[in-house]
Amino acid sequence: MSRLSFVFRAPLAGLLVLSVLAGCAADPKAATTAPLKGVPPEYQARPDGERVVPAVNPAYLNERNRRRWVEYTGPEGKDTIVIDPYARVLYHVVEPGKAMRFGIAVGKAGKGFSGNAVVGRKEIYPSWQPTARMVRADPALYGPLAGGLKGGLDNPLGARALYLYRNGQDTYYRIHGTMDPSSIGKATSAGCIRLFNQDIIDMFDEAPMGTRVKVRTRAESLELEGPMHELHTGYVVPEAEVELIAADDAAWAAGQITDPAVLEAQQHAAAVASAEARGAAGN
Image 1 (cartoon, rainbow, N blue to C red):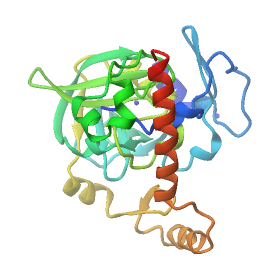
Image 2: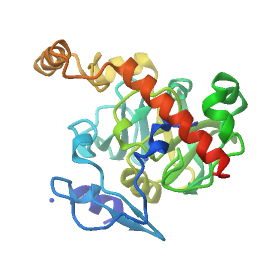
Image 3: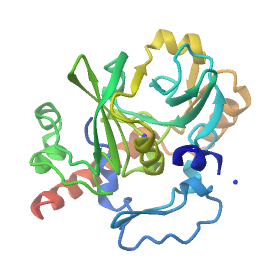
């Protein structure tokens, strides 16, 4: 049995929301591997070389975010990664009709590519550098980091990255980890496809060079997943989940959910301050 399969059976480009640079990212030196109550074994803290990947906060492990075995009804065959940026899930098809489903965060670039590709490059704790377009679009945020960031748990690409290629050419589409686990399951302003670090670490080992990847179109998503509804919390659920949607609407009406626009503005302000500090410190 593969390491990834074992973990699954136990009782996966641009900058992410940079608010984590202001303090949400865990200090790997302070992290421990002591079990965290309410966290499944596969999402507990784990040693990773000289680093310790922190446990995932159980508040982020809702039903659609946590990896789980599912019946797979798509046409893709064994050993294929299937990304649905509209339903915000990723499938690793292990045999016909069976797949491991992951929750993902989807940046704007995550909907800019569709069709077939292969894993053409793999990196452990990859470095990251904002594109010239990103710097032009938001110079306050990306300008101080224009020289790039070295790899680490506080890097936007997280613990691992899989780079997709088509016909030998880089598509600039990435599947990678995250320094902001709270973003998984949501749409974000930048980035491609990100997973919890624990998920991308295991998938990295199970996805050799040349692994086939399919990125669905919106039409394919509607056909295979059905219409989705975005909650006020930022997560998506099938429109058939009427009780869940009603509860979300009630919580929003009662003022129990922070306005996403307000939260984004706060995060952006904190991110700019942190980027300036990191830029001044030489990252």
